[in-house]
Length: 142
Image 1 (cartoon, rainbow, N blue to C red):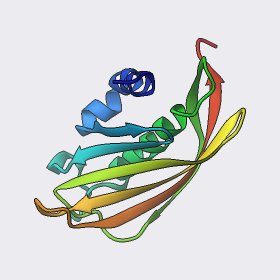
Image 2 (spheres, one colour):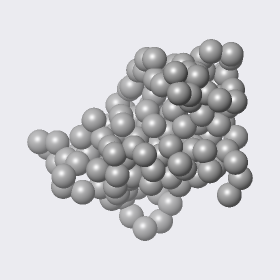
Image 3 (cartoon, rainbow, N blue to C red):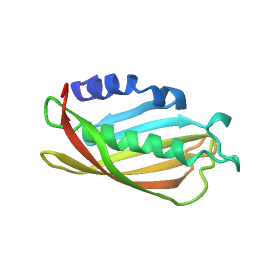
Image 4 (cartoon, helix red, strand yellow):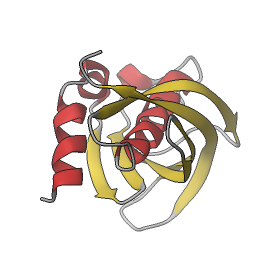
C-alpha cells in the first residue's frame, strides 16, 4: 500500500457514515477513488430503490478522497459544494461510486463522480447518478 492509499484508507476508516452504509474503499489511484456499497433494505426509500442520501454520500466521499490524493502536504479536504443528477432509479444489488479529480489548485479542487448500479454477478451496470463537486484543501489540525 503506497502513502496515498494509506492516507485515504486511514481517513476513510474514521468515517462513521461509511461504516453505517456498509461502504468500502474499492480502489485508490492518483486523482481517482472508487467506493463500493452493497444494497440493503435499510438503505431504501419508499419505492424500494436505494435512497438518494446513500447514493449521494458515497459519491461525495469518492470525490473528496480523489481530491485528497492531490491535496497539498499537510492538508485534508472538505466539500464546499456539489450538484447531483439522478439519471434513473438506483436499483441494484451493489453500487460503485467513482470519483475523479478534474482540477486541483492550491486551495480548491474540482471533481466529477458517477454512481454505477450492478444488478447481477457480471459486470453489467447502469450509471444512476452524476456529481460535480468542489472541495477545499484545509490545513490539518487547524
